[in-house]
Image 1 (cartoon, rainbow, N blue to C red):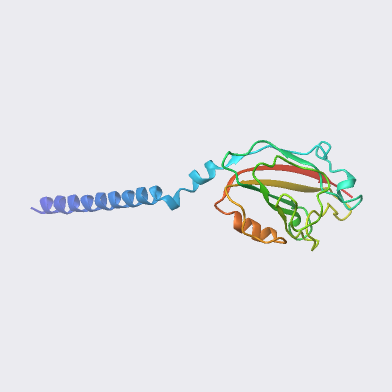
Image 2 (cartoon, rainbow, N blue to C red):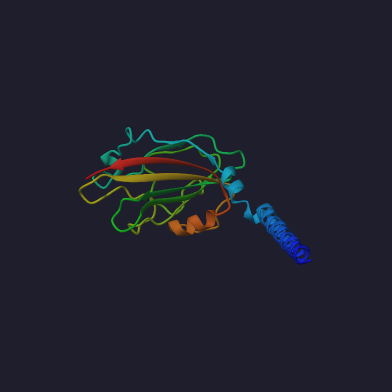
Length: 198
């Protein structure tokens, strides 16, 4: 009789554990299927573009585009973006700067039909094509050329973003403001890294 009671209790315990397992698996399935939890699908949707510059020789940034020269912006070209692209944004940073990443250029609301930037864009808040320039970490509007302290080479990361919208930001926006406004709107990106040493 005791053996029978023991088997009944054991069976009841197993049934309870199976029920818990089924409930847990069901919850995990529902969470994975929820639209807001599809992080991997969002990442997979983003495409890449090829960003190049005839101004940069190999990966070396010539002095004319730095504080050792005229400090003008380099030419940039990129491959076709997704057809639904409305605008582009460009952010140039120096992650090797002492203490923090230094921002050299913030440019946004470039028309979606744009495929290149010429050398020497003027340091204006708004350009003739409607695009806008933000504030760099020199405290100026537009491009600020590399000007690292003497010593080891610094890497300058040019990142171009294709977006499905224009950013509702005035001229002079910061990198943080542009990056916040881009969230959820990036269709593709391209990257180019140039090196400069003083």
